[in-house]
Image 1 (cartoon, each protein chain N blue to C red):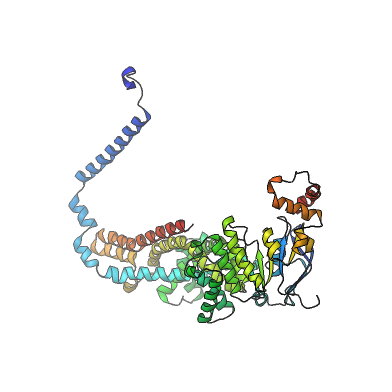
Image 2: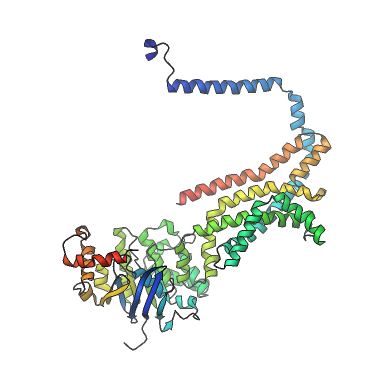
Length: 271
Length: 270
């Protein structure tokens, strides 16, 4: 090779890449070894994976906490979906006040933290107006998170409706359908196919945002995963409940993530 | 000619912003008549067709279909459109529905037909266009020609009195044009009133009762195909037809008729 004629010649590009990659693996391996040797495995095992504590967590973590997380998420999502669709249609309306109203709504609820909205509905409005949101904890979180989610979903749905080719509406109208009928039977079903992946992402975000319910001062039967984990952390002085609660979130979000990828792949194939 | 025309257009004007696309069109189409509208792109022929079922709102003038004035603001346009079938260049089948559902959904939602009746009409419609075996397929699984035949069947399922065709074969591969024109020819033979915007001169010559040549937003020539296609009286018609029949010749062929058409072409370009 050329190294014989020019011994001090710099390494070729490929050789340099190989050396660089070798170094990276070496550093990574070293870090793992140091961690494995230095770590107090008994302590870590006890803190993160205390089987006794795990035994205590079940079955309530599933029957109460996971169930409540799902209930809060689904209720808020359903509320947000319906309101979001109304807002999307308002944004696309030829009536100017509707468009303005929807735009103001979307800008407002997209801009303020969900936490603040939840505080407003949990404490602010009850104190100021001396009325409570009907439905207790579920009602409050449904309305508060639903209002915020609606702002995001409205924009997604508007984009989805606009992505349906004009010819679809024209064909439907030329067959004698009213504008509303054409929207309901032809345009919106196609729009939902287009926006199913982003909507599923919104559902994943909502699943995690449902943990904000702790602000409302939940009681034992209304605890969801995050609050359940935190209570158990105080009770057992162990990291284990937090880890298990986190894994329970993954039970919901990972399948949804897989679903999104499937849907996207199917759409890519349909084109 | 005093009997109510199937379609009547009176002094129709249509502008998009500053651009006047239709500059006063008068047209009477009798029941059972097949009229082909030809002309260069930008001449306003598609806009004229879309005004006939009010997909485009005319700027001025009147459109009457079956004696009913569509341009009357009090008219129930959805009810009138039921009697007017439309076939689009891009087919516009509903991609989320099967072929059968494409045919039955409008019947059920608009005409309130029962599921069984709509299904029967759909089946006989598909038989007529030769696509019974595709009843459960989705539009994306069909060729362009098959999709357009389904689109024709879908329009016919509503039992229209007039059929409008907006360049029905322009988006098709050449070998698929024949199957669509065949269905249209059959429809014409059965006495359907048809308005066809097309570039298919053989169809115009053989099937049409009348050919209307439009250019720059006006009707230049209107008469039987033997006259308009075979022996056009106007220079603009002659220039258009010679370009259509011999596209390679181009506008600089030295033909006097082509030169005369030059300014009009520029005027028509949007």
